[in-house]
Image (cartoon, rainbow, N blue to C red):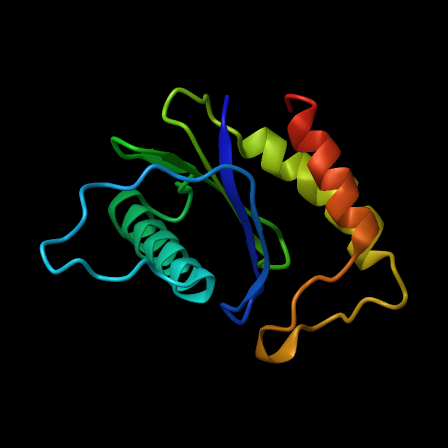
Length: 148
């Protein structure tokens, strides 16, 4: 399994954490030769996709249905939303099974332990001020490198 990117979005739609592991395969370049997206623009596009798909699933399926993941020809997007409206998004290769449980484990065992319980970590992240916690990053790296 190959993990490309991991995002955390707060309840105000700001990307508060991004981590890149492997380069995600890109589709064919557009005929204008546009420059690649910045990390901030990439996060906005990912959130917009998640927001749209989540709303579509709720409208078509009802309030009990949840958006979990979707797959393209190049990657698979996995989604987990916490009770406090934090959104955990992970992009992996297309062969990966559903990672909802893994994202829940990242939330409970890493985010809550190293970020929420840290008295120096802000509760809110105004203006997109992100998670800056070295222990969280190290634990996340070892969790992902350990093969999940």
